[in-house]
Length: 191
Image 1: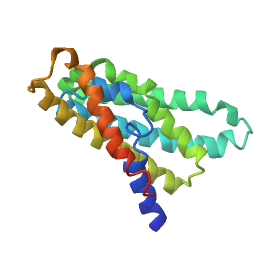
Image 2: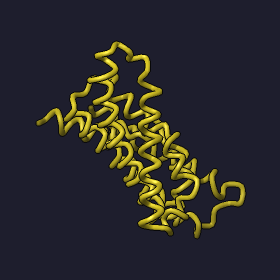
Image 3: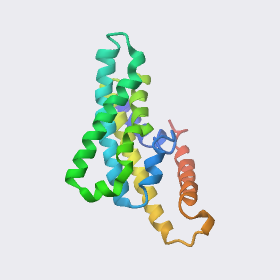
Image 4: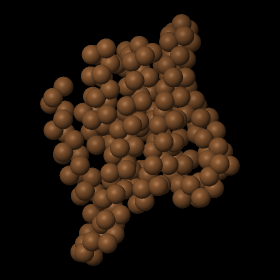
């Protein structure tokens, strides 16, 4: 049980997918201007990340390894992720048209979100069991949502702050992201 708790904390904070592994930066910068959009994207990424990690883990362990074609993992993982993103995009379009419109191009870009593919590959590379993979992926996704939400709150405040013209928009966002990354990196030494 201690191992699972340590794995969850490590995935959420110490190995935060955005701030320590620098994966998923595109939606992080693109959809973090409003809290509602950040949460919508965060939960969509979590869902795709979790389901794709489960499917790819099973495919890797019970198909690719058995057939000794592990070298096909990247292409198989990308196909699984692309299929899941299409399902999520269709679902969000039907259930929440405003969220679908707000997420815009970033929703289909979950397919190319390196965080989703990165987590699927990390689970295999780290040799996680199925339970460890589910815990690791869930907390990586929750860490993604947490950072997206915090960052969106900061960006909403920055819109009303007296930021010099040269730093407005993406430059100040990158500075804030760097500060958050430095803060989160301090947790890496704990584990």
